[in-house]
Image (cartoon, rainbow, N blue to C red; front, side):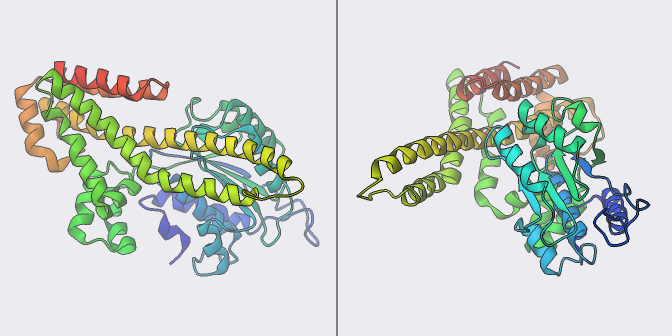
Length: 399
């Protein structure tokens, strides 16, 4: 076993990363005894991991970080590998956002820590999971660090694509690209059985309907609520016979997203508020209480802002999963209408898709697919979810 066993369905990428790790082990630093310049430059200091959602960008980057730090190039058995994969290694600094963006303040603090000499390993590694969510100022801060790197610092950036909307051209031009692909169904099913203990039948089904998203496959295989939400979403095309049903469907989609927000963030938000109150001396008396209370109010305001951003992100992600399922359904109807021999997004809905293709036209299926995609774009531009979803389901009914 090695850390590369965590990277599913990416043999070409793993081979490239393994070669880089072997080269990195031979790098000489200026502080090494008897070092010369001959070995320097053989290790790329900045990488850009790209690939579709669920392809395992951050998993591959984390495995690479573990292999770079591990004395045995990623054995997955030593303390170094375990701490890196768990996100607790002192010289591997990870950043991911639960909100809508990564700000410059957070990125500057991260880069400052990463510029120091490693404490226990050969490298200081910065892993940015959501590089596409960096603000312009945050991107500029990262660009400066990538342009003038410390010889022991490695930057690992993860983004959906190399498009300028995801990663600026200036940052991209200074990174070595590593492109991941959508994992195959068999590879996903295999990892669900081996790693998560899912039975083969459930694993095969989850892998076939997850759209190549490993995390989604795991949720569908293990979480009954996730399966229920998918069933509810795929029932929408059959429940738009009247105007009342249109608005009921919109309410159902938005309501399901709100319920997921409450389930995922409600208890956590309350616990964070209580923890903040205790840490700021809530309920205390005596000298300095007034000043502490002012500081506590400022900290509470900042916490509430972060929690609202997290709720917005969770709501968007929940709705986006529903919209992706709907888009996959109408995509299946469209290709079935044309008789194309391609793999279905929802193979377990073959009978319904066949009936929809027979009763409608490819043009109508295409218009409905475009309505779903327009809704996704509207949500990204901060259109109110209720309005965007109602417009979509109205278009779905009209065809």
